[in-house]
Image (cartoon, rainbow, N blue to C red):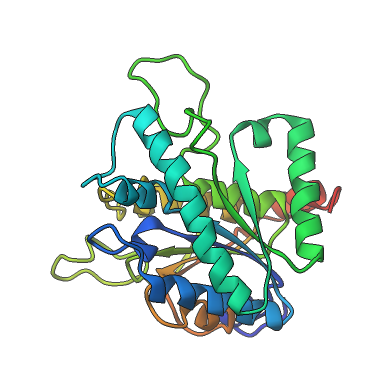
Length: 293
């Protein structure tokens, strides 16, 4: 991109996929943090005003549904999770629609299942729809279609089901990024980035920059908590997908005010994972993505 530093190069990204985790927009008591949600909307609107295209992958529907239904914890039974998703998704979209409407932007709900990536025709339809929405200045808000799909929610022990294309919104956001030919993936969590050990342990150090995700890097990952499906391990899996497509990714704290603006201005925030520089991958992946752009 011609920038002097890897961080500065992020300022040249024109199409950005942002994933917001459940723990970013949900409070400990299960309610929505309106201030955080509106803050993220304001940051995305600012990026749009600056001429950037943004796609938002947002978790939170199941958590919102559970809270709406008076459940103390996220359910484990698949049909109950689906019921929570059905209740919570409309609530989630209503809040985003309200936030972006106040900022002068339109949004579109896009609910995806694995078949949207596995089936060639549905995949091309998805690309065409997202590209059209972006051209119209609309901000797509993407989530898994948990209400009708069980592949992403449950996998019985010992089953011979096909390998999951994704099973969480972290990997979904990375797949959206590669299929829509975006320049940057930003994963917003409730931690500052990737640490050398559990962020709450003594001596844990934030890693500002890495090149790629190795098996050793996976050793730094800690498990997720009870509200969302993801954790650092799923985020690293998403980062690996982005890096293998020769695109950078950032893991950062979504509760930090203005963090999206900082990242996209090339300022220090979170952990930056630099893309692979293998020329054979770069040319091959670029050709594949560019065919139908």
